Length: 106
Image 1: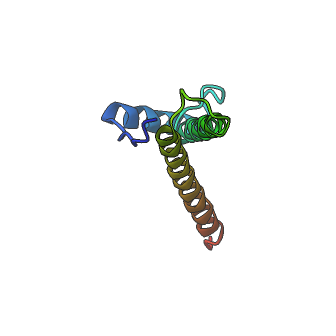
Image 2: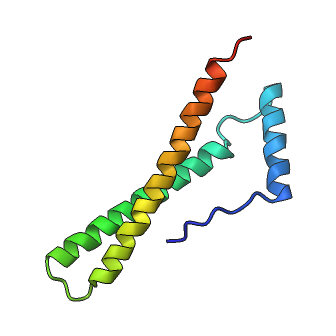
Image 3: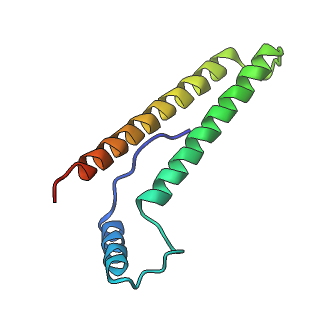
């Protein structure tokens, strides 16, 4: 599983800025969505899939399936753990940012 974070291209930044402008003007299509929420949802699904695959491999190793090696299983478990920790850190940062914004005085 590839856990690289790809940077936004200038075209993607332009599209995101255009979507934000349309949203501010009220002309955006709310169903079309996009942006951070879709990226975060995709990342969560990816982490969940990695955890499920690691769990399945662990079960297969415990049952003595010779086609699943212990090394592959341990690697899959570590990848799933790293993905979960990264997701947890992003969530914590989002909660902290929300708390900071809510505590701002207007």
